[in-house]
Length: 125
Image (tube, rainbow, N blue to C red; front, side, top):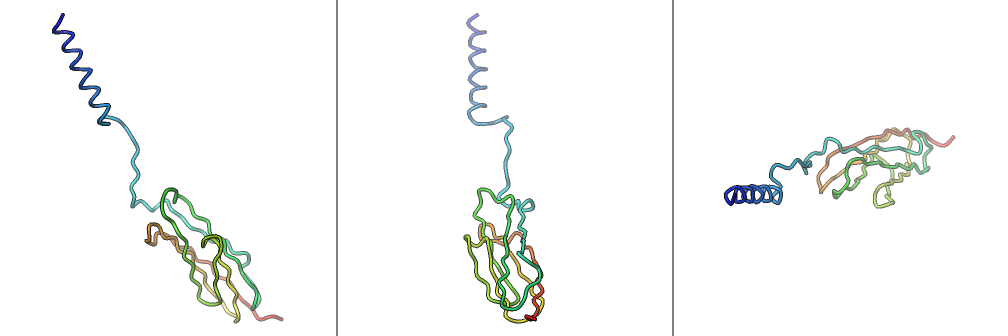
């Protein structure tokens, strides 16, 4: 009987060690470099405007929780300003033409996604 008790205690000790170290446990891990699910989209206030008018661009990001994410804006023309910690951009276009506005999603300082919107600016009638 003493041998059976000793064997049972050994088994419990081994099981306890396995549980404490996490060996044999199923758990989900997330790759720090997995950026495929991340997304950025731009919604402009309008796609057509007159010269001198301000066009507002709203960014929306997805799947960046827990990471240092930032939006960087670029435009092919006009005067660009940002608000709301960079999540909103406003551009005033002084000349007629077709312009592109980019929202670049950077995570931990590296570009991971980008969205572009084209706006058409015409002269005031």
